[in-house]
Structure formats: structure tokens, C-alpha cells
Image (cartoon, rainbow, N blue to C red; front, side):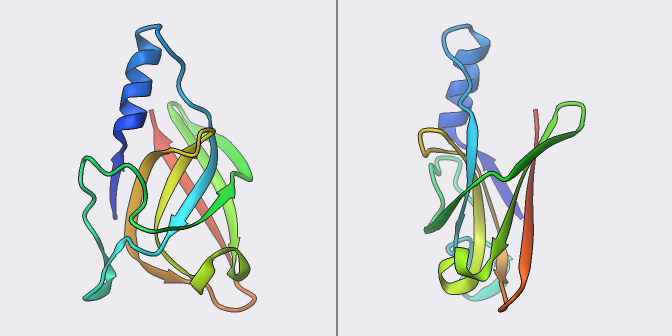
Length: 127
């Protein structure tokens, strides 16, 4: 799995630390189907440091739960069902702020959701 923190998130964090802004609030997780290597769907695609969003965002879902499992760690959770993801497959995810901008992006091998299957997706962010 590849993961980056976007420039938007890094700039927001710097301004918040400097007292000239606040860090955006995470409100949703986005999913897409462009995060895998087309020649090998089990392999993730590298993410350029300048990436601002998913390669191909297909769904944005509100965060259903959050927890703090360890010091400096926040976990955001959503439950995916087949009807929530167009095409029933995804290979990338992002945590998204209240302006709709990606704060961090992950890519991974293609995952599919079968009929009547529930898929729980947890994103843990270490601060």
C-alpha cells in the first residue's frame, strides 16, 4: 500500500501550528478505482508527492465512527456495502475535509464487494 499526505494537509497543518489557521476537520472517506496497477490488479499504483485527490474518485461517504486507539492516533471508520461503491470495486481511499479536499491518500490492490457483503474500512492516521 502506498500513502501520502497531500500538500493541502501539510500547508493547513503548518498554518495551524503557526497560529495562522486551523486544521481542517475530517468528515468523509472517499473511494476510487484508479489506485491499482492496470497490468496487475493486486499491485498498488505509486502516488506522486503532488497528488491532490484520488486518481478516479467514485464515492464519498461520511465518517460513521472515530476513535483514538493509541496516543497520537485517530481512526476513522465507514461500512461499505455493494450499493455504495459504483462498479463494486475500489483500489484507493482518501480522508476528506469539510471542503471536500483530500488530506491523505492510499492506494492498494483492487478490492471487490460481493452481493450481501459488508466491508468495514478503517483509516488510522498517526499524528
